[in-house]
Length: 232
Image (cartoon, rainbow, N blue to C red):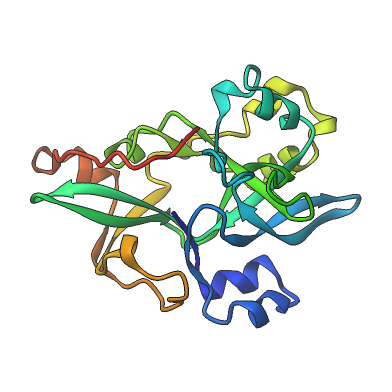
C-alpha cells in the first residue's frame, strides 16, 4: 500500500484542483485505487488521476524491472508509455515481538518519493488509466522490510524517464534507482493500517523516532522483515 499526505497534494498540483478531491490527502492507496500521477507533456508534465494497477484480474500494480525485456505486458510499455507516481510513503511491515508492525517508509528530507511507472489503459475499463510502479532489488535499508523496493527518481532521472524516446533502454533502466542508504527513514504506524476502511481518510499517526540505516546496522536491531507483496 501507498500514501500521499495532504501537504504533498499541493506539491503535486500547485493549481490545488486535487485539493478539492482529497482535502485530507490519500493516506491509504490500495491496488486499483485512484491517485495522481505525472505524465509527460510536450512542454513539461501534467497531472492525471490513474489507478494503481492495470487489471483487477491479476497482479499488475508493481512491475519487476528485470522483466521489462521479457514480460509481454511490461515490454510493450517500457520505453514507450511512462509516468511518475509521486508518493509520501510506502507502507511495509516488520515482524516485531510476535506481531506484524506497519511502517511508513519515506524520504528523510520530507519531500515526495518520485517513483517510475509504466502506464496503460486499464484492461477492465479502457477509458480509465492505470499504472504499475517499477520495482527492483532493495538497498540495505529497505531490505529490513522487504525483498523488493520501488525505484526512486532524482529530478534529472525523472525528466529522462518521462521522455523515453530521447534515451536508450539501458539509460532508462538506470532510472529504476536504489536510493542512497541514508535517503529514507521508516516511521512506525500506531494503527492497524491493513484493516482501515477505504473511506477512512484520517491521517496515519506514527510513534517514536524515525528509523534510519544506522538503527538497523546496530547489533541489537536484527529483526525479521515482513514479506508483504511488492512486485509482479
